[in-house]
Image 1 (spheres, rainbow, N blue to C red):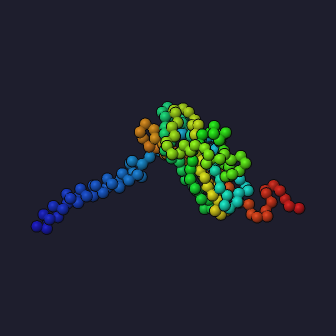
Image 2 (cartoon, rainbow, N blue to C red):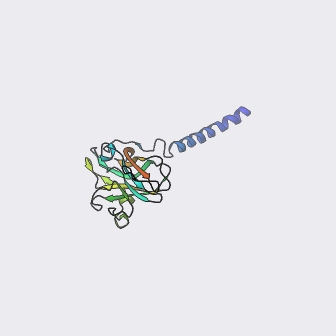
Image 3 (cartoon, helix red, strand yellow):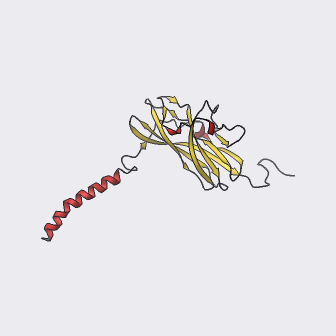
Length: 197
């Protein structure tokens, strides 16, 4: 009888364990998660250096442009979201936006909120609410940016920009080089290159 009772529960236990395994595998980071993408160019302007500012202050808000998406593949893509993978202590990530290069009169790589050359992003159309389409073999007219606040002197750079996109019904993710350094000058310190006599 014990063996029979155990055998009766066996198929039910097997069905339960199978259903549990399927639920775990389909929870986003398994087989249904985005695969590694290769559609975006990796040799853009921001891949060759560090953008920075040596005169930032705690409390400042800054806009950091991510690389302009350039689809080098032979099929269109739809960018669904972006992320900055490495945000150091001392920097708070406030959010992302997507704007037309024509509306901003070019790409503002790094600009302080309310600065004299900073576009008024609040008055511009934000394209981040829908997927951004990039035609095959084309550079996008839309660029993404991150808004950050300096909460303490950063000990490291902001870097590694990630794009999430769909191509032909398949989800991909691709990391592109980007690096921004915001240095907080000590009060009373002379800017680098100047000496106080």
